[in-house]
Amino acid sequence: MLPTPPIVADGIALFLDMDGVLAPMAPTPDAVVPTARRTAALKAVEARLSGRVAIVSGRTIAEIDRISDNALMSGSGVHGLERRLKDGSIQRKTADAGVAEAMEAFEAFAADRPGVIVEDKGVSVGLHYRQAPDEAGAAKALAAELQSETGLTLQPGHMVLELKTPGADKGTAVTAFMQEAPFKGAVPVMLGDDLTDEYGFEAAAALGGYGVLVGPERETAARYRLDDVDAVLTWLEAVAKA
Image (cartoon, rainbow, N blue to C red; front, side, top):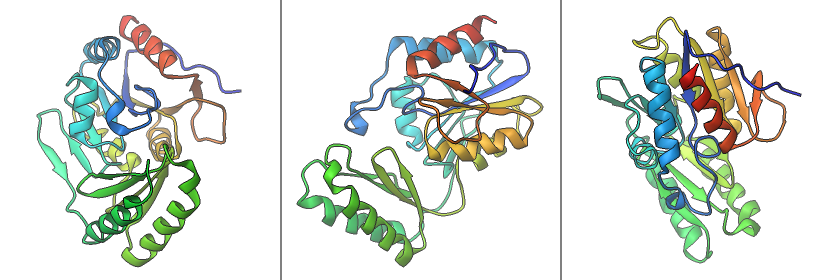
């Protein structure tokens, strides 16, 4: 059994996944909306930590801003492929040529499969089948074939398959932030729920910090665990007051 994380603010830096951590999972990406409690918790904990808070998500930075109601400046989107620094500047990888090929194939796949959604993130493309779970096998076969053909990185998630430009992940994002002010010299703490977050857990541990798994117990590099989104927000509110 993993213990709950300590409530401590001094000297830590927080890296927070979005879906399943700060926001509940939803049938479609657009169904996740801002909430007053989430926005307030993020602003409060960022103030307490002197700015050492970043959202590190598979979503784009634009989507991070929409859902968080622009609560934070620092953030990384699309599994590390785009990163916004404290000064507001954005670093973004150039999209691999294979992304366009994957997009075309995913759109053809979704055309006659109700409930399957294609999400264009510019540097990657996602195939969501949460509303069409019977299509999981065919979706996985297609994604694996495209990965082999294009050389893109295949990133599975919760009922989604993403083909993305190679060269970055949530771990590289955490590592990059930790080399810069105001994060440099702090103890990194990464909160995440799925396999994409394991890169962040490992990066945090390598830099003297730790990961916090959100959701059911499973094999993980995280050292602590919280039950769900509500538990995360309650913990963030406590850290903000620590």
